[in-house]
Figure (cartoon, rainbow, N blue to C red):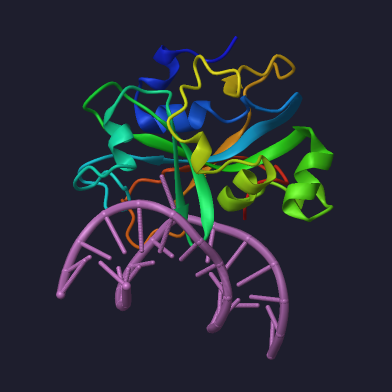
Length: 191
DNA sequence: ATCTCGATTGGCT
DNA sequence: GCCAATCGAGATG
């Protein structure tokens, strides 16, 4: 079962933290690519200087004001970045997926990334989208109902992961709060 | 039509 | 650690 609407329509920082350890599934043709989310960042709306929803809506970011659980994909520095929207309608928010531990479909990921080492496949927001073949085509997908792209609970993991936090990476201006979350000690965290 | 910018990456020192 | 290449969106003319 995919995580439901209620999971996403909560405080963005909580969603970002709770996505750690969850399983991300991407179906490409008949093959499944699978990985565990190990690093995320939370982005709010007005008052968050680093957020794309800090000012006016655009064709791409308007989705942040809609319901939670929808994919938001855009390009930065020549790389596609993948987010999932949070909160309900009219409250903007999204979680950026920054790091994933590859679990299934490694050969396809290696081909798309042109790298061999597992820790080089998805240990960064742009690396992850390249490894999973995610691009503009995957913008606006409802991950609570889609077969192509979904997020599920991790049945194999009983204890909750040990989480560390830091300031968000690469942003020109950040809030005082630490809004980057990652699983302590995991090799697929970006840095 | 052209310009600017960025939630990045990888190669080099 | 530094820095250049990256490329599409949004703004501007």
